Length: 68
Image (cartoon, rainbow, N blue to C red):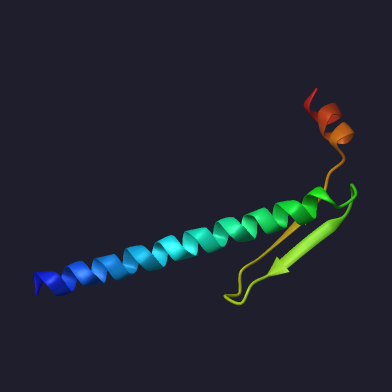
């Protein structure tokens, strides 16, 4: 019984680890895309699980003026 629970925990940990690595790779992909977009561009993503997000690339000069 304890061995089965241990295997279940191990399977969950491996699945979580795989998911985290997948998200990290996706993050690097999105950053690479955004880095190459001109200011004012918009990017939107809709995932298979139904989640979505949208980002507008700001001009760095405009951000510094707002902060300062």
